[in-house]
Amino acid sequence: MPQFAVTPERSKILARIPDYAVELVPLGQTVTVTINDQQVARSEKALLVRETRHEDVYYLPGSDVDMALFTPTEHSTFCPFKGHASYWNLNPGGGLLENIVWSYDSPDTEVAGLRGYLSFYTDRASIVIGP
Image (cartoon, rainbow, N blue to C red; front, top):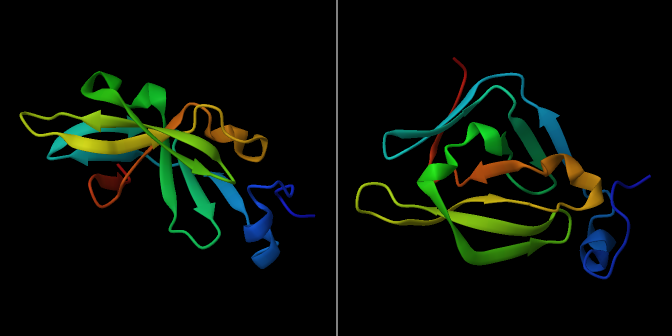
């Protein structure tokens, strides 16, 4: 049985890729995120998100991210398999890094485990796995 129900937003993709999947895998290792040599997050409860036709992405619990460093933005995006994403900027020492972190505040039912987790763009943040 497919993971995702057919909805108007998903129908075209599911017609081409009926077995489209998003897998949330507890990583079981420490994940540290640094941006411009500043540690902004560290977690032992990270998720590895594997999504059909996408690179793997790490998500960290919001409680393990230093949210005092970030400000919410008006930017949002929509994924037919995860829902609406909200974004935050980082303003480190005089420079602004726009929309560098995102989360799904109310993820779709099939990926409800993403609620409360945030992710970082890997081309703009250093993500290190391990001690």
